[in-house]
Length: 195
Image: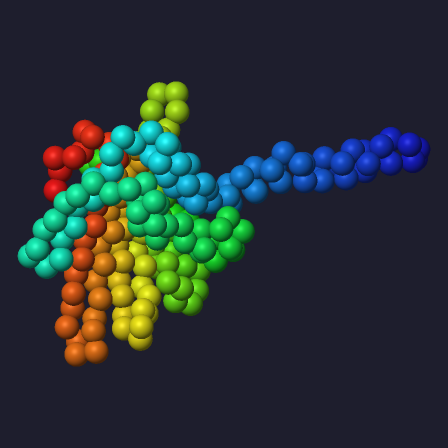
């Protein structure tokens, strides 16, 4: 028996069984989370550069107030969305992603939850509106549990791209009394009339 054709077939089999770089790239792409920090930072920059006025609506219990705020005050409030957990490497390693298509809203939801432990960022959802040529991030929602001054604080925050953000903060004091404050910063005038 000639060994030439046998060795050729074995070499061909070995080469064909080797994983391709394309499949490695696809696996890496499939495991990649959305760049949430970059999305919010970019939208914050656009709002800061283009907003003529930023309206802040505040509600403390039954008391409501609204006023226009400076860009510096706007950036200070928005900084709560720029969470250290959203650093791409940390986020990739410590949060798992699931996704679903919400037929009611017509949006794709990417849901992120901690893989283990109890970090401050408990839940994050990115709502994406599919389009014919490109998909667009509609909004980002976060749930955060922290302790400030020894008291539990719960934050529910929504960032609506190119429009506004909402921060709903619930805090328990030493007596167990809950205080709730809701802030909505609006930079898109189309939403100024919304509560």
